[in-house]
Length: 155
Image 1: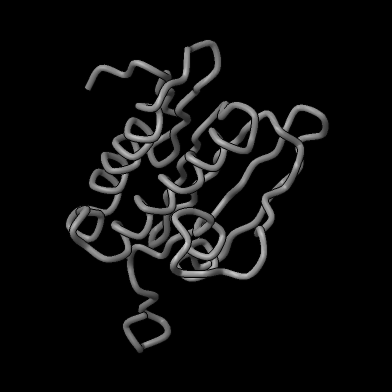
Image 2: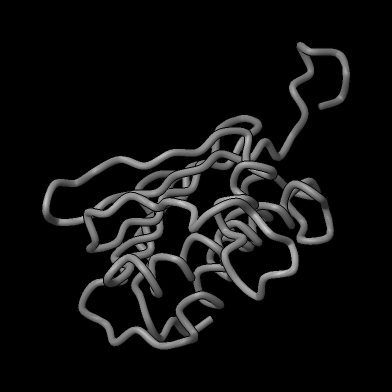
């Protein structure tokens, strides 16, 4: 795939950066970040990382939400970072705003927007933000792609 908005940099076998600095960002940046994530999920997790699998679909939806929020509210998205463990995908999206994400009141399902943080709460195993000083912040989340066999309950 030709990447119009960013540059993919493989850090190691299960770690990659999608650098969004120095490229004009348009509406296609969200689709490209989803595609980079889709390829990583399938490569790192095999069948469990296929987009029709629930955990992979959740991860792709959350990438869309977090990158969209970075684009709309976070100044400028600067990097998508993906790291795979034996069973989980860790996602980090950095942007140029130091302001942490915050809900705009209670979640209301009928609103046209404002669902991103609610979806993070519901679908991610965990999530948070890390300030990067005046240079911005990183929003991160984890999705468990493979069940934890030690729990014995398939979740």
